[in-house]
Length: 129
Ligand SMILES: [Zn+2]
Image (cartoon, rainbow, N blue to C red; front, top):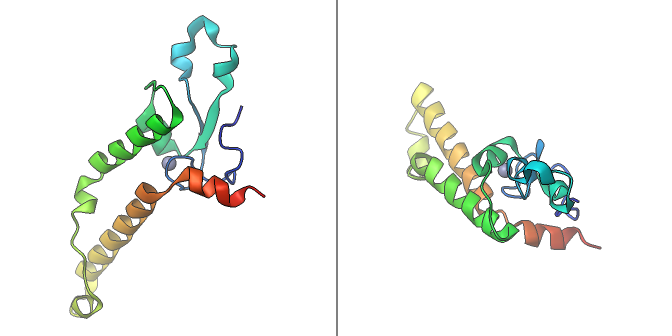
């Protein structure tokens, strides 16, 4: 059963990026011989990074799983989040490879902020008609 059926199918439940796989809410590795019970088919769509970060972690609820994932992303991308902000007037003083490096850093930071702020429940509420 898809626990995020009101979310567009191309969106990762956890971070809002492009969904490429299914994240089993109860990891398949934990099900053992109970692989065919109702929990074996409980899943949400996710990107491969979120799926990998969650791995075989087990939580009491989906919001707890989401909270854990966001904490993992924060820790993993701590360096990206520490990239300083550049004003347009500062950027015009840069050129070449340094300018490209700074712009790439700003883009990476912006995408990370979008991922961390993504709220699947608010997004699903928007798509329920
Ligand atoms: Zn994701």
